Length: 109
Image 1 (tube, rainbow, N blue to C red):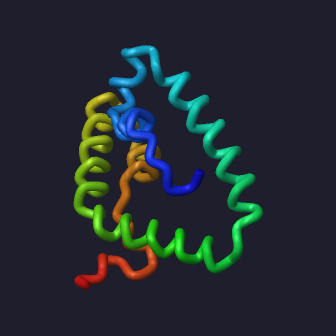
Image 2 (cartoon, rainbow, N blue to C red):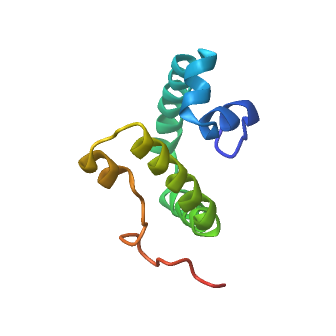
């Protein structure tokens, strides 16, 4: 159901990748995310455009509201990848500036 928060899955999706890998839950988490995505796709296919537009607007607002946290987490990911010897090309793709996003930086309201 859209809007239902699964705290356990949300926490797994926001855990550092290495934490999931070490605990052996990465594969299980990815399978669960895939199952949920397929279910959501079925629901979204039947949802009216107005409902989809409201959901997209709410997601965009949440991303803008969390921009500082998103960029801080990305900086940690980049630093870890760099320390691990990742290539310059990989680091470039990993680095998020979010400048290409519409209405970036976040609206002040």
